[in-house]
Image (tube, rainbow, N blue to C red; front, side, top):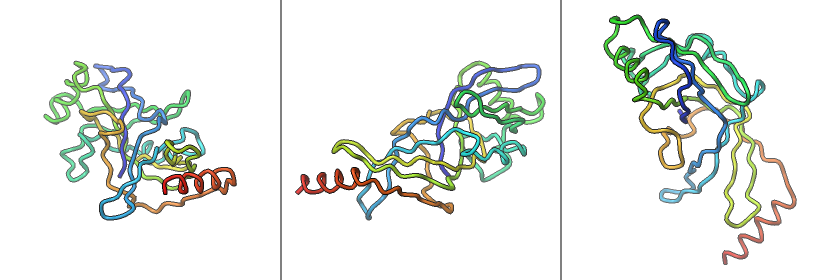
Length: 196
């Protein structure tokens, strides 16, 4: 599972709902392992478009979790009522259970309502990615997810940034497309020669 964070937008106390942005498609620095102790950085970018994001699971009542904990139903503090795309962002309305039904959900809703907990993170799998090779010496590879599936939204303490991401690795089927770019290939060869 992969995750990234986004801010909470609007809260309706009577309906116990929260409107939030679960993705803006911002680049997030990741690492891929090339050996036992060797990692290469790359930027992961989630494409935000109707062709790229499969919202079926979110719109089927996906869980809203406490910190991406999928191991018990007691970690579920709410449900996704609706997910949609607007202005290059992924949006969702999530609903908490009625007051008094679940102590953990009541605590989470209270912390969100008081704006103590402000960060949201989405759990997703990547189904297809386009790789853009670096063309400059100090640049990194970009992996643009052109087909991906969000399957849960979590309230988290630490927002998505280069050093604070939760990731379980590439454990889902993934199609990698590499477009041949002669200029990029020549630039890579020159970078390798300059390194020696």
